[in-house]
Amino acid sequence: MTDPSGIDPLVEGPRTRLRALHPSEYRTVFAWYNDPELVSPFDRFSLDTFEGFVQDVESASDDPRSLAPRFVIERREDGRLLGLLGHFTPHPVLSTVEVWYVMGAREERGKGYGSEAVRLLVDHLFRVLPIERVGAVCDAENVPSVHLLERVGLSLEGTLHRALFHHAVWHDVRVYGVTRSAWASRPTSA
Image (cartoon, rainbow, N blue to C red):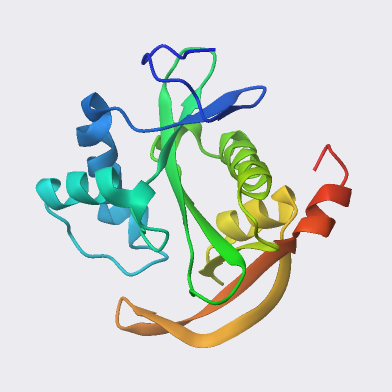
């Protein structure tokens, strides 16, 4: 099924779909990606140029280590862009992929769209990649992200103490993950 943007979705859930960014959406997604109020409360932040952003997005599929946004989160009901997400291979030897996400539409946070989108992405990654684990990391103080990862079905695997420096303070980082077998055996309502 083609979505309103004319781009075939990667995957669809009950309320959201994940799909590639369309060039007409680059400015919107770039604004979210470069918004310090969205990104910097719980992560390191640096401004990117629009040209660099476009180059990174358009080359991401050829680079497993790319941190560029790979997909948008779109509400199925009306095609509204809600956020963006991506995945990357953090280490060339390990059989794991890390996921990340940003809910750009602030007024749509806390409604389950992000959880559904991350769940769809994890399903997709296990379906198409020969990996054994999908993980995510987040600032230990980022309570909404902690709840999202736990709600989706990733388990807390540990804490990296004082591993992230931003806002002139060292922060602990929580490490979450799920193995292929654990993901396959989780309750489907998770």
